[in-house]
Length: 326
Image 1 (cartoon, rainbow, N blue to C red):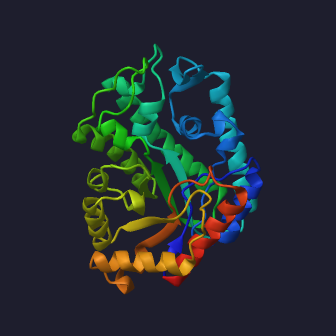
Image 2 (cartoon, rainbow, N blue to C red):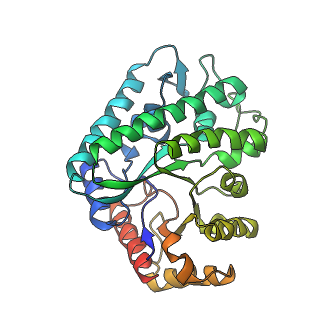
């Protein structure tokens, strides 16, 4: 059968409540939730830097910056992650089955974190390579910690979030001055950095998915990095991207389809309508639902941090209902 999960972020500031929602509504594939409304140390970049190994950072007026020694905000980000995992461990101690966690990808980190002397890590070949490798190393340690905490989990999935990848490969990341754009990263290098992270996840015995809900994400490049799953907002996929998705499914990989609105809609879509949309997609791609349904995962279109608490809960339940329908 198809399963359902979330992208990662949820609204509000009550982390325990977020974990209860995920465990209660997504019994087949819960995830380690992110609650970024608690501040920058709980945001996507701060969370990613909390996982990175061997590099120090601090929060500057312009944002996160690599430093010689971890500043107070970097230490807080790591402490908050540990506290959150304590909550996941406590509430999920009896859980058995598959579980997902998320991490900010190497290119999104490179596009949002500054070098010690300013400007993005993206501007320096050596710095962005070092950051990607430090992320890969940190994920090995992070996964070992998760396995220790949740001993009933027999299948770990790491979702690598790359919302900035499209901007990186299309030269759309602004320079520090804001008047220029960083040079595009060529596909071989963009692929190599993702491959380091994917390989580290695989070597640790977990599955690697890559997620982006940004338009013009180079999905064919992503698919060639050894990932086990692609996670995308269906509304942002081009015809070529859909072909890549179909090839991934035919190869036995996972496709996480973002079909449920991630912010409060003007009119709530019915589960029947969303189910029919997925069925039409499979028909258009020439795929047999009976053959690929176990590889399908239903999700919101993106993270739910911008939704109201009531819609976040409804979107989570709606994703699970659509998955059961399929």
